[in-house]
Image (cartoon, rainbow, N blue to C red):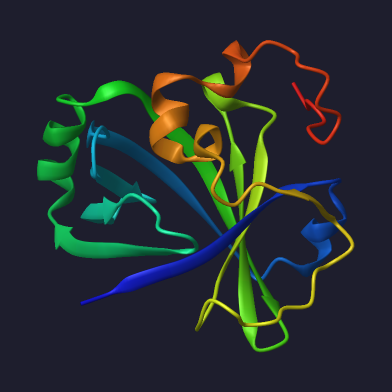
Length: 167
């Protein structure tokens, strides 16, 4: 059984781009995202697709089960989604013995850039790069499943200066 231990941060500026080792386009949609679980369909590039079931977080930890599925079936399932399709480019940055994943969102979530790092255990210490902004771990409005229903562009300005809109 797989568990995900992840921390999320807003990104302060574009300085991170000089460290990118790989970029992948991602389209994903949610078949369900209420209650104790979310069920996601994800297509990476145009060649691979997965069905993922995740539990709601308990601290940094959440159950994550992921299964490969044919892209054609993923395309059909996306039509059954709740909310909008999330589109983003994921950039990976090796950092020490870990890897940061930077998601640059587009369409209705354009302007939002989130950095994520997966940990080996809940108390793992990590070096935080200078290009990170505020930590948003556990803030549900930054979950992709929430962004599908309440996109970043629809958020009312709330005086939160930790988000720099890049629209």
